[in-house]
Length: 484
Image 1: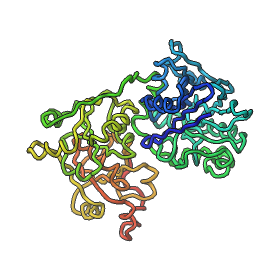
Image 2: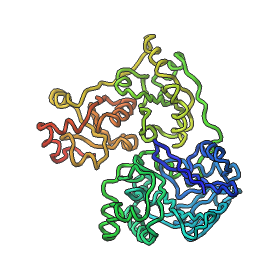
Image 3: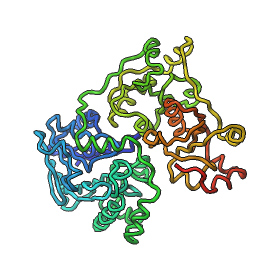
Image 4: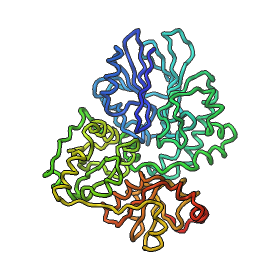
C-alpha cells in the first residue's frame, strides 16, 4: 500500500492519496478543487486515480469530488444524516458514484475501506477504516478521520449554527459528537489517526501540528476526548466554549459543496495589468482590488483607492474569504512569483473571477507618476493611550471574542474580523482605531472599513506588550464597556 499525506499550508488541510501498487490504482480522500495537484502526484507514483471520496460536506474549501466525477472517476459520498445534508449534486446524476452508510465496505485494489458514521461536526460525517489486505492484514491499520478526530482536538460541532445559520443545532450536534467519541474509544489503540486538518484550521480550536496520531495517544492526551470520558454535560460545555468565529465564506462552502461546486476545468489566467489599467480600477466599487503585499505599513501609506488587503501569508484564504463576496471581479496586487499560488488559494474557496494582476512594482510606478493613491493613518499601539486622550475615537478590537473577553482595551467594541463584513451595519459611528494581536487582522479590517467609507486608524504592534505594561494591565481586564 502506498500512502501519501498532502498538506495545504494556508487551509491547514490534509488530503490523502492511497494506492495499491499491485493493481496500479489509487484513491484520493478529501481532495481540494484544483485536482491537477493530485493527478500529478499519482502519475509520479505510477498510479491512476480511480476513486475519490469525501468524509463530509466541507465548510472551509470547495471539494474536488465533482472535478473527479466530471473525469469519470468513481466517487464515494456519505448517505448518512438527515435530508438537509445530502450530496444533492450527486443524487440522480449520471456520474459514476456510490452513496455509503455506516458499516458499508468497498475496495480499491487490495485495500478495504470500512465506513464509520461519526456525526457531530456535521450530521452526515463519515470516517473510513483502512485495511491493507494486500499486505496480509485482517484488521485496519488506520482511520481517515476527516473532521471528526484531530491530533489534540475534535471537529467543532457549532458550524452548522455559527457559520451556516441553522438555528438551534449547536448543542444537539455536540451531543451527537459525544456519542461518536464513545464509539471511537472502542477502537484498538494501535490504529493510526489520519485527520483532515492540522494546526491553523478554523474547524477546531486546539489542533496539533503533528500530522498524525493513534487512537491510544488521543485517548490519553486529547483534552476534548478527555472531557468526553468524564461525562456528556462536561463535554458539551468544553467543546462549545471558546470556538473562534468562523470566516464569512464558510456558509458559502457548505452550500456549494452540498448543491455542487461549479466545475472548474482549468485554472483562471488573469491578465497582466499596467498603469492605464490601474487607472480604470482606482476607486471602482464594482470590482475588488486585493492587495497582497506583506508589508502592511506600505499598504497603509499608499494603495489604490478602494483596495482590500490580505497579506500573502498563511491567513490569506481566511482573510480574503472574509472580506470578498462571491461573483465579484478580482484584481490582484501580487508578486509575480506568488501569482499562481494566490490564484489557487482563491479558487479553493470559490473566488474564481480573478481577472487581472499588477505587481507591487507596477503599483509603485503608478504612484510615482502622480496618479491618485489612498492612505490609512497608522499608529503604533504604544501611541494608543495618547490618541484616546486627545481624540474622539472608538477602539474596535477585531480579535475573536474568546481572545477579547479576558483582556481588552477599556471601552473597546469587539467584532471578529472574520465576521466584520457580515456585521458591517453594527460598526460604531465615528473614527475607529482598529487593533488585534499584532496588526495582521486589523490591517485587513482597516482596509475593509475604509472601502466602506469609514474613518479609520490602523493600530500596528503587539497587544500583549501593551497589555503587560502596569498602567494598562489592570484596566484592560476591567469589565467591558462596549459590546457588539
